[in-house]
Length: 218
Image (tube, rainbow, N blue to C red):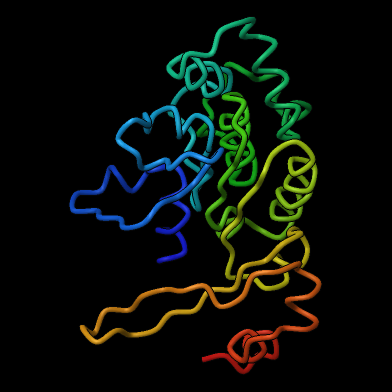
C-alpha cells in the first residue's frame, strides 16, 4: 500500500486525501513539485497516472480520450488526437469501428489500455502505473507489458508491481522497497536497493533483496 502512496506523491494525488502530510522535497526538472509556487494540476498533466483497477469514464471510447484532453486544455484536431492516442496504446485496431460505444463495455485489458490512451493524450513526460496488470488475465497482461515496452521509448514509465517476474520483463531499473514497524507501531516503507534490473535480480547487494529474490522473504 505504501508503494502506491509513494508514487501518488510523484504527481501530488495524495494532496486530495484529508490529513495527508509530506516532509522533504520531490524534484522534477530541478524544481520541488511541492513548492507553493507550483500548480498541482500542471504537475498531474506532466506526470500522468494509470491505476490498479481500470477506471474509464462512463462515456464513449472517443469521449474518454477527447473529454480528458479538453478539460486539461489540450487543443488541436481532436479526431487526430484520439486516433494517435489509441494507436500508441495498441487499441486502435480493436475499437476504431466502435468509438461511440461506452468505454465501460470493453474487456478488462481493453479498459486498461483505454486508460493508458487517456493518459497519453495529455502528452505527459512521465506515466505512473500502479499495479496496472493486477486485475487482468494473462493474455491482457502480456498486451499491457508489450505496451509498456513500446511506451518507454518515448516516456519515462514508473511501475509499481509485486510481481517479480513482471519487474524482470518490463523494467530497465528496479527499486526494491521493504517495510518495518516503527516505535509507534505504525509500519513505514523504505528503499532497500536501486540499480539496473539485471543486476538487482542476479547480484543483489542487500540481504533483504537477496532473500526476496531467492524466495526467502518474510
